[in-house]
Amino acid sequence: MTTDSTPPGGVLRPHAEQQYADELARLAEHDDRPRPPGWRLSPWAVTTYLMGGELPDGSRISPKYIGPRRLMEVAVATLATDRALLLLGVPGTAKTWVSEHLAAAVSGDSTLLVQGTAGTSEEAVRYGWNYARLLAEGPSERALVESPLMRAMRTGAVARVEELTRMPSDVQDTLITILSEKTLPVPELGTEVQARKGFTVIATANDRDRGVNELSSALRRRFNTVVLPLPATVEEEVDIVSRRVDEIGAALELPDTPAGLEEIRRVVTVFRELRGGLTGDGRTRLKSPSGTLSTAEAISVITNGLALAAHFGDGVLRAADVAGGIVGAVVQDPVSDRVVWQEYLETVVRERPDWRDFYRACREVS
Image (cartoon, rainbow, N blue to C red; front, side, top):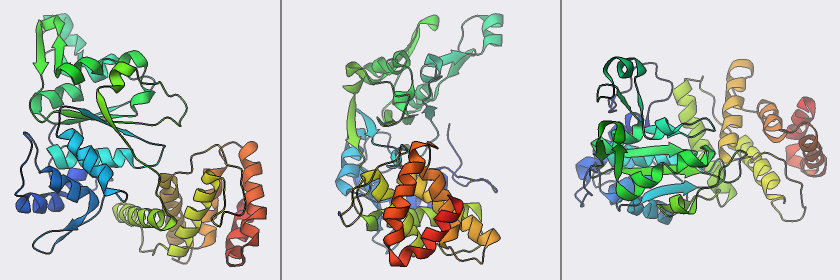
């Protein structure tokens, strides 16, 4: 399915190729490097789109991924071969975000998506049938319902498979023939769909969530794996959260409420210390809660805080606006996580003189 480059009015979340259509167009205009068959941009331009940079005319490309450039170069180089790409990492490491932007830059369409769940069927990966036509006409092209992967094969585009390890193992393995032979047999019609040049698959997976089904060795061999790490430093994570909060606030048309760097840094610090089991100065060991406390959750906490500050506060993001979100993110298990949170609050937060307002706000909602 090809999407229009201009998102319709009122769209809550435009696709990447819509939201960043101007940047993609400028990159294409200045891109004089070799492009693999079926690609809209060269590998260099795709990487520049992801990492950000400056074009010869002085225009800027905003960074979509903040992290090691080499990881993105490896990912893009993989897509330029006949191998599929597996983005692996703990929840909140921007796997979905990166896969969407890769698909948008490579083929101009990030919507050819299979969402992996425990209920994902084989038909969602291969193809299905319009049963009314099937009963009336028997097996035919008109009765065939193409999956996103089949459409990507026909058009030479990038197909995305989200949360691959959440899909049942037998459904996962339907990808093996597609990835190895670049062919999807349709035995009911005595035919097959052969992938056009430009077709590839980007899958995402993590091994930290519940409900994970391990990939078979046969399927794993069909992928090149790139592991996306958590942000390396507090400053890097604060930068990521700040950028995404600004983008989300603009998309939601929240009243103009500056995202206070002090509160963002506090949220990021709390998340990093609890998930790492150690305070930032390395002096105090901590118990970690059951949740992941990912960068994505930090973005959610700050965005919710901005909405509170805009609609129920004085328009300035304060400790009281983020306290409730932090407690909700940390205390997933009402018994064990509450103990972890209370210990952290009393032994760490309480002892930081410049965090007294944050301590009081968290005590009130705890």
